[in-house]
Image (cartoon, rainbow, N blue to C red; front, side, top):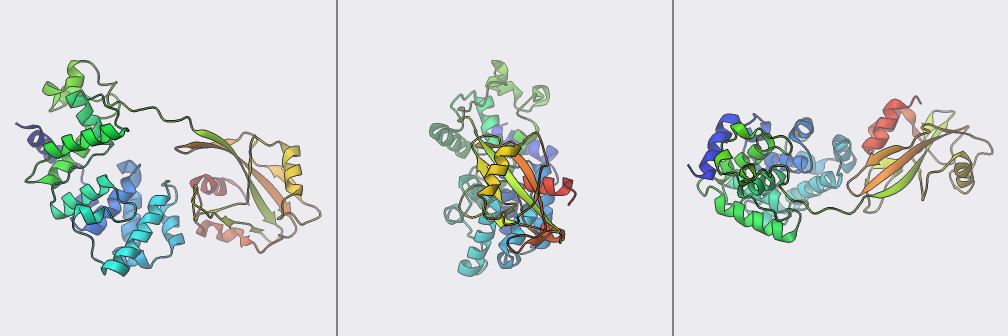
Amino acid sequence: MTINKTLTYWYSVNKRDLPWRRTKDPYFIWMSEIILQQTKVDQGLPYYEAFVTNFPTIFDLASAKESDVLKLWQGLGYYSRARNLHATAKYIVDELHGDFPNNYKDLLKLKGVGDYTASAIASICFNEVCAVVDGNVYRAFSRYFGIATPINSTQGQKEFKALAQKLIDKEDPAEFNQAIMEFGARQCKPKNPDCTVCPLHNGCVALQKNRITELPVKKKNLKPKTKHFNFLVFVSNDKKTILEKREGKGIWQNLYQFPLIESKASLDFNAMTSQLKKHDLISASSYNLSLYNEVAIIHKLSHQHLHTKFWIIETDTLSIQGVSINEIIDYPVPVLLSNFMEAFDF
């Protein structure tokens, strides 16, 4: 039995019953693939269900406010995916009259859609022979064929894509693509895979050479930068606070946050008091400053670690029009701030 037939048979027996596997509608497949980028199925599933419930058609998503899309996405991270999701929906509705592109080449033109996502949609929805290559595929193929080329190198990406394209079942590319991804996720797992029950164990180079833990190979990334964030949590007598919308193309674009002072090192009480004297939001002659967390909360992102402190500023009135504390839950915020809002007793 060939490797593709072995995998598709294994898949027919072991596949999970997931909602996006019960349809070939490109809207739902696209939605699931965007949500599952950088996200495990167990974490992404409730978000998928929430999105298709709130936006059952691409027209519903396109007509939604971006803030509502970001709010629904809250906690999933990598918020550019949500912004791209919304922008692409509007493009398809406004420019393509609601019709999804039906081939790999045109799917690649959509914002937020790369080789993997375009291949998945093209194969699953339109039966185009386009092999998918994601982390699960890299892992399964690198181990089975004993390939040590780094998977995050240009050479590795080309090598694995060519191999996957060679192996894909030309008659049923959708089934094969879903099979190899499910196989990597459930059988050829990153840690402690049970090779004794693997249907490919007889031909697996990594198993034969005892290299399961060594493959796949990945080039080391640069050490994440350390940043120090100091959020100013204003609380006025009339129960209002201040939220600001993050602009620019950095992290958390278009999400809301408390006013932020970024420092080169951790600030103590005296240093923060000095900073506040220069801050234009402090206009009251008197205010009470306190620190919510003595130990900085470390929020880890892919390229930076945020050492975060929340400074509580109690004042009679705010220098600008604030937001009712009862309404801040309606604003899309980073999960770091969402967790604070849930824990802090305003």
